Length: 556
Image 1 (cartoon, rainbow, N blue to C red):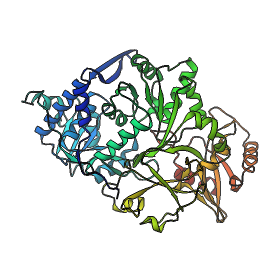
Image 2: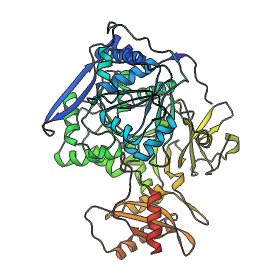
Image 3: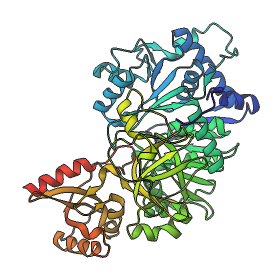
Image 4: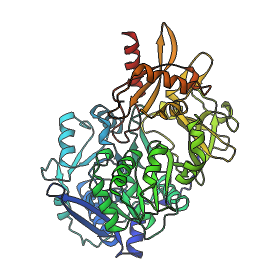
């Protein structure tokens, strides 16, 4: 395992520091709308006020019986309470458990079963679902509601019962740097959801990466569309502006709300996943919006298409870039690349099937490419480390990399590789390569590769060739059996409203495929009405479902 300082730390200390040094500076602003979205309201707290709220919540939780080491599921919408409770839990030494409500009922139930939470804090809707579906029934001993129904102890009443002076500081638990601070569940969009263990050291390393590699400085204002990213604001001296949107379904966000919040607070930073960036790009371009205050855009969560990035760039100043950040819940960030380099230097390689460039590794991240295998690799000495330009499995090491999955020893063993120095590498589950300049390229998910008799095909490398057809919205490479022989087929989703002669379309796609050695292996094409994709990113294609659909289509 990586050697980590055992010095006592607590991520909550960052808020206290900002409250002491810059008490009157804006910390958070929450946008809400009334009258069917016609009137906007903003709730603002400076750092001193947020510190007071977090302190009060810490005392309230402590007096209710929440203790150091308790696992606490937090299902609260972005709000003052969300921020105050999260920092309060860190102070108490409890372990917040974050789950994505968009992952589905079945996956949520599994997450609760694995995490075995001691405490549940949620809005009314979350409590109703918890009772209806039996989430955490065997383990939860304390339930707290942030709402009106009173399904458990009401947070407001707990805070009112705090008898001490509200200015009395709740001393944060002095946790060890490598002690588990939180559990973040993966979305399950590319497999079974797994709880990723986060330490205080990991959180601090992520903060350092944002400060050093993205150049975020105190005094900035961030339009935060992902609540967990917003929590880094106090540590960076940056105000977090939370727009009125469902963070679990960004594709449904109202662009007008977001543009208004950016304008009101002159936001300098914008965090947006590719789905939201596409929504904002379309709306902004149609209405001639220019986001003059934005100094950088950070996009993460799924690969953004060059066309989507180029469209969004039209809303920005010429010097402002969209930074694509590569990583995963288990390791974020790993690498980054600016849109200027991406569009001007790497896109031509992408268009020829060379994969998507995800940029240079950020500070303190080491990347190795090993020979692709689905088997356990215990140590780096057992793996075949590949040379520059060779496609293999992407493995990373660094302070932002999680050491384990919670209560999943088997999954942890499959995902980690010990190195010769007592550290470990995390297997990203993606295939790619390093080029001669040190840039990392991604070619697709390892589990989605199509293995034929004499070659292996990778999704992103193949699909990009066919996605260039003007009538095609997106494609998905799948493996099927025709007359008992495995073949590579391409599922095709057309642009909205497009009507085509399928026989002619397939001939055109076949001609595109013949231009490159790897896409010559695609044996056939099938038009699908609308790909099944994940709710959050609207980009992660459920290829397993498409494989079943394609096979059934060919068998009929």
